[in-house]
Length: 234
Image (cartoon, rainbow, N blue to C red; front, side, top):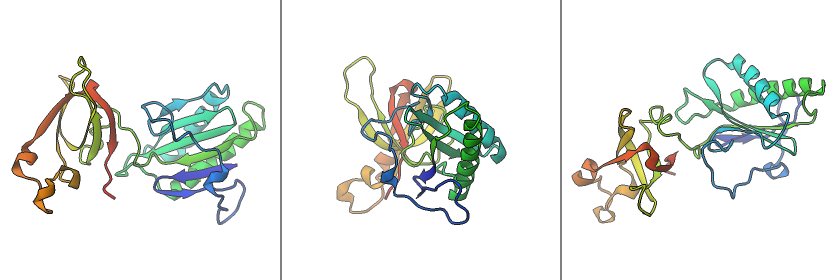
Protein backbone atom coordinates (compact mmCIF):
# COMPACT_ATOMS: atom_id res chain seq x y z
CA UNK A 1 0.00 0.00 0.00
CA UNK A 2 1.38 3.43 -0.93
CA UNK A 3 0.38 6.71 0.68
CA UNK A 4 1.24 10.30 -0.01
CA UNK A 5 0.67 13.29 2.21
CA UNK A 6 2.12 16.74 2.61
CA UNK A 7 1.83 19.94 4.60
CA UNK A 8 1.22 21.67 1.25
CA UNK A 9 -1.63 19.27 0.44
CA UNK A 10 -2.61 15.69 1.19
CA UNK A 11 -3.08 12.60 -0.93
CA UNK A 12 -3.23 8.94 -0.07
CA UNK A 13 -3.23 6.48 -2.90
CA UNK A 14 -3.46 2.74 -3.33
CA UNK A 15 -0.80 1.02 -5.39
CA UNK A 16 -1.81 -0.29 -8.77
CA UNK A 17 -4.67 2.17 -9.33
CA UNK A 18 -4.67 3.57 -12.85
CA UNK A 19 -5.77 7.12 -13.64
CA UNK A 20 -7.29 9.00 -10.72
CA UNK A 21 -5.89 8.00 -7.36
CA UNK A 22 -8.25 6.52 -4.81
CA UNK A 23 -8.37 8.50 -1.59
CA UNK A 24 -8.35 6.96 1.87
CA UNK A 25 -8.97 8.86 5.13
CA UNK A 26 -5.71 9.72 6.85
CA UNK A 27 -6.89 8.33 10.20
CA UNK A 28 -7.08 4.85 8.68
CA UNK A 29 -3.31 4.73 8.56
CA UNK A 30 -0.68 4.49 11.28
CA UNK A 31 0.27 8.01 12.33
CA UNK A 32 3.54 9.25 13.79
CA UNK A 33 3.40 10.17 17.48
CA UNK A 34 2.43 13.84 17.49
CA UNK A 35 2.84 14.10 21.27
CA UNK A 36 6.62 13.81 21.05
CA UNK A 37 8.38 17.15 20.53
CA UNK A 38 10.37 17.25 17.32
CA UNK A 39 14.14 17.39 17.44
CA UNK A 40 16.93 17.48 14.89
CA UNK A 41 17.55 14.03 13.42
CA UNK A 42 14.26 12.45 14.55
CA UNK A 43 13.29 11.25 11.07
CA UNK A 44 10.28 13.59 11.04
CA UNK A 45 10.09 17.38 11.30
CA UNK A 46 13.72 17.34 12.41
CA UNK A 47 14.92 15.46 9.34
CA UNK A 48 17.51 12.70 9.37
CA UNK A 49 17.29 8.92 9.20
CA UNK A 50 15.75 6.68 11.87
CA UNK A 51 15.39 2.90 11.40
CA UNK A 52 13.85 2.00 14.80
CA UNK A 53 15.61 -1.39 14.84
CA UNK A 54 14.27 -2.40 11.43
CA UNK A 55 16.86 -4.70 9.88
CA UNK A 56 15.51 -3.92 6.42
CA UNK A 57 15.75 -0.14 6.94
CA UNK A 58 19.15 0.38 5.29
CA UNK A 59 18.09 -1.54 2.18
CA UNK A 60 14.87 0.45 1.93
CA UNK A 61 16.85 3.69 2.30
CA UNK A 62 19.26 2.66 -0.46
CA UNK A 63 16.32 1.99 -2.77
CA UNK A 64 14.91 5.45 -1.99
CA UNK A 65 18.21 7.05 -2.98
CA UNK A 66 18.27 5.04 -6.21
CA UNK A 67 14.81 6.31 -7.15
CA UNK A 68 15.71 9.90 -6.28
CA UNK A 69 18.54 9.83 -8.84
CA UNK A 70 15.87 9.97 -11.54
CA UNK A 71 14.64 13.33 -10.23
CA UNK A 72 17.89 15.27 -10.63
CA UNK A 73 19.58 17.47 -8.05
CA UNK A 74 16.49 19.49 -7.17
CA UNK A 75 14.78 16.83 -5.04
CA UNK A 76 16.48 15.52 -1.92
CA UNK A 77 15.64 13.24 0.99
CA UNK A 78 14.88 15.38 4.04
CA UNK A 79 13.76 12.63 6.41
CA UNK A 80 13.44 8.85 6.35
CA UNK A 81 11.94 6.68 9.07
CA UNK A 82 10.89 3.06 9.27
CA UNK A 83 8.73 1.36 11.88
CA UNK A 84 8.68 -2.29 13.04
CA UNK A 85 5.04 -2.43 11.90
CA UNK A 86 6.23 -2.19 8.30
CA UNK A 87 5.74 1.50 7.57
CA UNK A 88 8.13 3.81 5.74
CA UNK A 89 7.86 7.58 6.19
CA UNK A 90 9.66 9.67 3.57
CA UNK A 91 9.88 13.46 3.49
CA UNK A 92 11.16 15.04 0.29
CA UNK A 93 12.81 18.45 0.13
CA UNK A 94 12.65 20.55 -3.06
CA UNK A 95 15.67 22.82 -2.98
CA UNK A 96 14.31 25.41 -5.41
CA UNK A 97 10.99 25.85 -3.61
CA UNK A 98 10.72 28.70 -1.11
CA UNK A 99 9.48 26.40 1.65
CA UNK A 100 11.09 23.21 0.38
CA UNK A 101 7.77 21.72 -0.75
CA UNK A 102 7.74 19.46 -3.83
CA UNK A 103 4.63 19.52 -6.01
CA UNK A 104 1.95 16.88 -5.54
CA UNK A 105 2.86 15.48 -8.98
CA UNK A 106 6.50 15.10 -7.93
CA UNK A 107 5.59 13.35 -4.69
CA UNK A 108 3.09 11.09 -6.42
CA UNK A 109 5.65 10.16 -9.09
CA UNK A 110 8.30 9.37 -6.47
CA UNK A 111 5.79 7.42 -4.39
CA UNK A 112 4.73 5.22 -7.31
CA UNK A 113 8.29 4.54 -8.46
CA UNK A 114 9.59 3.89 -4.96
CA UNK A 115 6.70 1.59 -4.06
CA UNK A 116 7.24 -0.31 -7.30
CA UNK A 117 10.91 -0.85 -6.43
CA UNK A 118 10.05 -1.87 -2.87
CA UNK A 119 7.61 -4.48 -4.16
CA UNK A 120 10.16 -5.71 -6.68
CA UNK A 121 12.85 -6.19 -4.03
CA UNK A 122 10.30 -7.51 -1.54
CA UNK A 123 9.48 -10.34 -3.94
CA UNK A 124 13.09 -11.53 -3.63
CA UNK A 125 12.88 -11.73 0.17
CA UNK A 126 15.51 -9.04 0.84
CA UNK A 127 12.90 -6.85 2.55
CA UNK A 128 9.31 -7.48 3.69
CA UNK A 129 6.93 -7.71 0.74
CA UNK A 130 4.05 -5.79 2.33
CA UNK A 131 5.60 -2.44 3.32
CA UNK A 132 3.35 0.63 3.51
CA UNK A 133 4.69 3.98 2.34
CA UNK A 134 3.92 7.59 3.20
CA UNK A 135 5.59 10.38 1.22
CA UNK A 136 5.33 14.01 2.31
CA UNK A 137 7.10 17.36 2.29
CA UNK A 138 8.93 18.77 5.33
CA UNK A 139 6.25 21.43 5.63
CA UNK A 140 6.26 24.61 7.67
CA UNK A 141 7.10 22.76 10.88
CA UNK A 142 10.50 21.62 9.66
CA UNK A 143 13.28 22.28 12.12
CA UNK A 144 16.14 24.32 10.69
CA UNK A 145 19.68 23.26 11.39
CA UNK A 146 21.99 25.95 12.74
CA UNK A 147 24.00 27.09 10.91
CA UNK A 148 23.51 24.77 7.90
CA UNK A 149 19.99 25.90 6.90
CA UNK A 150 20.28 29.57 7.76
CA UNK A 151 21.74 30.76 4.46
CA UNK A 152 19.11 28.90 2.47
CA UNK A 153 16.24 30.56 4.34
CA UNK A 154 18.01 33.84 5.18
CA UNK A 155 15.37 36.00 3.47
CA UNK A 156 12.50 34.40 5.37
CA UNK A 157 11.12 35.23 8.79
CA UNK A 158 11.95 32.61 11.40
CA UNK A 159 10.68 31.75 14.84
CA UNK A 160 13.56 30.98 17.15
CA UNK A 161 13.81 29.65 20.69
CA UNK A 162 17.06 30.41 22.46
CA UNK A 163 18.87 30.96 25.73
CA UNK A 164 21.17 33.87 26.50
CA UNK A 165 23.54 32.11 28.89
CA UNK A 166 24.74 28.52 28.83
CA UNK A 167 26.11 28.66 32.37
CA UNK A 168 23.16 30.13 34.26
CA UNK A 169 19.72 28.55 34.60
CA UNK A 170 18.17 31.21 32.41
CA UNK A 171 14.70 30.74 30.89
CA UNK A 172 14.23 29.92 27.23
CA UNK A 173 13.15 32.87 25.10
CA UNK A 174 11.27 33.08 21.81
CA UNK A 175 11.41 35.59 19.00
CA UNK A 176 10.09 36.18 15.48
CA UNK A 177 13.22 37.39 13.75
CA UNK A 178 15.07 37.93 10.49
CA UNK A 179 18.65 36.88 9.99
CA UNK A 180 20.87 39.95 9.70
CA UNK A 181 24.29 38.32 9.33
CA UNK A 182 26.33 35.20 10.04
CA UNK A 183 29.88 35.27 11.38
CA UNK A 184 31.23 31.82 10.57
CA UNK A 185 34.60 32.50 12.20
CA UNK A 186 33.11 33.26 15.62
CA UNK A 187 30.16 30.88 15.19
CA UNK A 188 27.57 33.58 15.82
CA UNK A 189 24.47 34.96 14.13
CA UNK A 190 23.03 38.45 14.34
CA UNK A 191 19.24 38.82 14.25
CA UNK A 192 16.81 41.69 13.90
CA UNK A 193 13.12 41.97 14.69
CA UNK A 194 10.77 41.02 11.85
CA UNK A 195 8.08 43.57 11.07
CA UNK A 196 5.17 41.40 12.19
CA UNK A 197 2.32 41.85 14.65
CA UNK A 198 4.17 40.10 17.49
CA UNK A 199 6.96 42.70 17.37
CA UNK A 200 4.89 45.86 17.08
CA UNK A 201 3.81 48.07 19.94
CA UNK A 202 0.14 47.26 20.71
CA UNK A 203 -0.41 50.96 21.35
CA UNK A 204 0.83 51.86 17.85
CA UNK A 205 -2.58 50.97 16.35
CA UNK A 206 -1.34 49.26 13.20
CA UNK A 207 1.63 51.49 12.50
CA UNK A 208 4.98 49.91 11.50
CA UNK A 209 7.68 49.19 14.06
CA UNK A 210 9.41 52.09 15.73
CA UNK A 211 12.96 53.08 14.79
CA UNK A 212 14.18 51.70 18.12
CA UNK A 213 12.71 48.29 17.36
CA UNK A 214 14.05 48.34 13.81
CA UNK A 215 17.55 49.06 15.12
CA UNK A 216 17.41 46.30 17.77
CA UNK A 217 19.89 43.47 17.22
CA UNK A 218 20.51 40.12 18.94
CA UNK A 219 23.84 38.33 18.65
CA UNK A 220 23.73 34.62 19.45
CA UNK A 221 26.34 31.85 19.26
CA UNK A 222 25.19 28.72 17.43
CA UNK A 223 24.96 26.69 20.64
CA UNK A 224 22.43 29.09 22.18
CA UNK A 225 19.69 28.00 19.77
CA UNK A 226 17.13 25.51 21.06
CA UNK A 227 14.75 25.47 18.10
CA UNK A 228 14.42 27.32 14.77
CA UNK A 229 11.45 27.05 12.39
CA UNK A 230 10.00 29.06 9.54
CA UNK A 231 7.40 31.62 10.54
CA UNK A 232 4.04 31.65 8.79
CA UNK A 233 1.61 34.49 9.42
CA UNK A 234 -1.79 32.86 8.94
